[in-house]
Amino acid sequence: MRGMVFMGDNKVEVLDFPDPTPGPGEAVVEMKASGMCGSDLHFYRHGMAEVIRMLGFKDLASRGISEDTLIIGGHEPCGVIAAVGPGVDGKTFKVGDRVMVFHYEGCSHCDHCRTGWTQLCDHGAAPHGVIKHGGHADYIKVPVSSLVHLPEELSFKGGAAVSCGTGTAYGALLRLDISARDTLAVYGLGPVGLSAAQLAAAMGVEVFGIDINPERVARAKDFGVAHAINAGDVDPVEEIFKLTGGKGVSCAMDCAGGEVPKQQAVRSTRVWGKIALVAVGGSLNVDGMKDLIGKQRTVIGSYTFSEVGMKDCAHFIARHGVDVDKQFTDEWKLAQAADAYADFNKQAGGKGVFLF
Image 1 (spheres, rainbow, N blue to C red):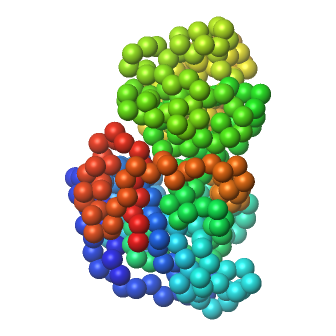
Image 2: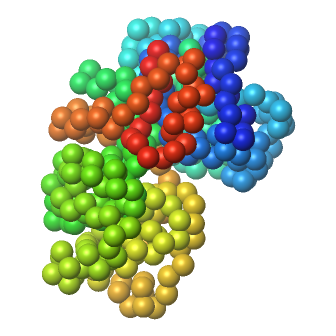
């Protein structure tokens, strides 16, 4: 089969790999859609080995991995079960089922794994597309426990979005315990930020969307943003306070990364405000008393989502008719991977996806 590998230095290669065979408790999924995530750009620019070191993964040798191991990229897989291994209960998952893949593997026994938070595994998680082969391939082999049925109302593209970016946004909204009583400022209108806007708007939340890219700001209202703010033209904190009668929003989310948007996310909330930090990158450098303690604000770290949360997100989208497919502005074939990531690396458009 074909699989795409991040080589670093803004290069990718599509190589030949053996077709996977499922072992006990495993399934092979024939890929139908594999999304491109903003975090992929770390691998694209710096290479897998460098990012693995940066993320602090240890004991790779015990997993049969060295710095020279070629790992297939992509951690937003969605497709159809092509084969199942011994011991798989056909009543739950069977050949032909449409499925999304929860892209972390863990020990399956610690409390985090048992509650669906495999990325927090006490013994170290192994993400697909980083430590395990990912979805930018014709097939992917995964434990059946990592599969989630794709609702009929969702396309394979939509399932790929839920498998990381859109699911991550949903997880952060749950961490904020948000409802229609709230107002939400979303900093960074890339795929995760636009997903947060779409989902929050479907919950009845008034959404403020902030970005420095004029094209992303212009698109924002199509995703449920009530107030689209170009932070390159105005101070977004001042603008939000102006639009909220001097109070600020009740909730904010940083989907941009970097120190400045994190500061702005905190400072644009009202007294008792809640802030979810989602994007990787940048430090939270704020005044403890003036920005946090004195305003009774709560800062929450939100690391993707649980497997149960992924299922809930997909069904929320299906029930509310959220059009997640329109996040995708670019569709590619795997053979076009080099062009796809060169274009995605500009970070000017929407989301990209490989279709099979």
